[in-house]
Amino acid sequence: MDTMTPRELTRKVRQLDDDVKAIYDLLLSLDAKVLALTKRVDKHDIRFDALDARFDAVDGRLETMDGKIDQVLEVLGAR
Image 1 (spheres, helix red, strand yellow):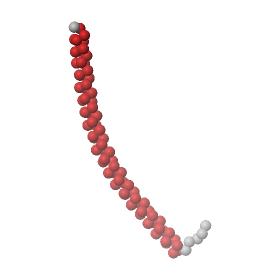
Image 2 (cartoon, rainbow, N blue to C red):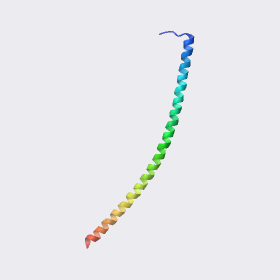
Image 3 (cartoon, helix red, strand yellow):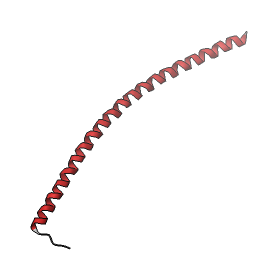
Image 4 (tube, rainbow, N blue to C red):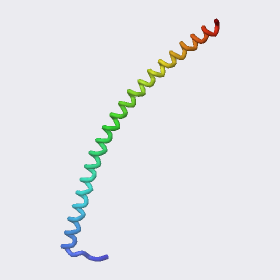
């Protein structure tokens, strides 16, 4: 292994320190992006829940109408 001079060692330590700081900056940036995306997903989740509730209501109405149509057909078929 090559030995480093004190000057080279100091330069290497500074370089590694700068690399660590850059990594922390990247992590902070990623954390902010993940938080923003999480908020967007949460908003979409709320919207999907509302749509799901509306579809359930429409489904209920269609089932009721289907039952009424069956009754009408029975009455018409009895004549």
